[in-house]
Image (cartoon, rainbow, N blue to C red):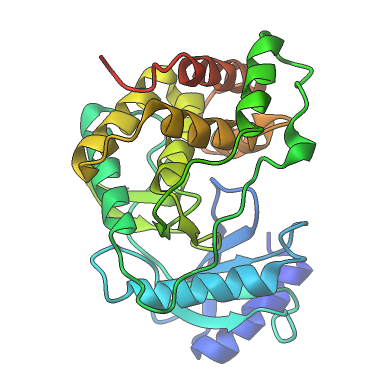
Length: 304
């Protein structure tokens, strides 16, 4: 059922897209925005992102404008991204900050992972990192693991691991060469058609920074979905394809930074998985996150 906020936004879509909307479907899999798939009377489809949730709504102008700009940049690349159709970053016309985009083919694939999926994901992320934005570089990356996150969670089974993680982050960040980052790259933002990636979405956090922060984020997500082995396999696959074998301390730092970013509780990302039919409970995600941290701290990120 379409609510009042969505009704106002759809009126805005009809005015800027110049099509009458005949059907709407709420898309699941994310947790920062309300996202609708819209079908027009002529059969055309589009996707509407509405920043209805805090704190993202408060920062919507920057997030949505960044996403639209990045999509325009990547339009000249082989990376399959939506095309920006219309933007109301303040919500002055749509009633809520909104971004209208083209609809890409494909489906999320969260319920299973294979060596082929891991290799295809790694190939795509290498391509993202090799994209040259020219002088229009995105903003520098931001840490999601600030001091306020560095508190041992109540659900921890190994509090000592978290203490070691916080000590790791007290050290200076490793030197790195900046590169183009998706910054929220994981299975929940990748669309598949068969065995091929047909779309990469959610570019609001695009940044400039260390490639292995992107790798770490995808690996953490894989660990919570499917366990430690696929996370390690993905890191290894990326390193081989990128021709990049960083030192263990570099990998450890960026992985710990990403893992701590999920505190105080990774449960916030689990509900969208359940919305798509997965049976992963909050406790299982917590256990897997801690297991991933243990592997990272033990230098067992890669497969033997």
